Length: 75
Image: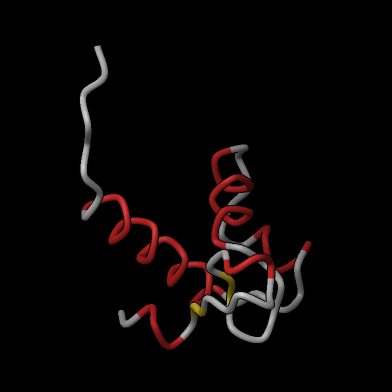
C-alpha cells in the first residue's frame, strides 16, 4: 500500500502532524484509538470520514516512520 495517497502533512493543518487527506484526523489519533481497543471497523463509526483503507494507510505510515527512526541511547 502506498500510504502517501492517503496521508498528508501541511503546516496549516493540525500543526503539520500527519493526517488523513481532506480531514483533521491525525495518524496519532488513529493509533491511540486502536491502542485503546477500538477495531478498524469501529473507527469509521466514530469518524465517518475514515475508511478501512485510510486506517491501514495510517498503520503503514506509522510502521514506516518507526522503522526509519534513529535510536539514541541515553544513560
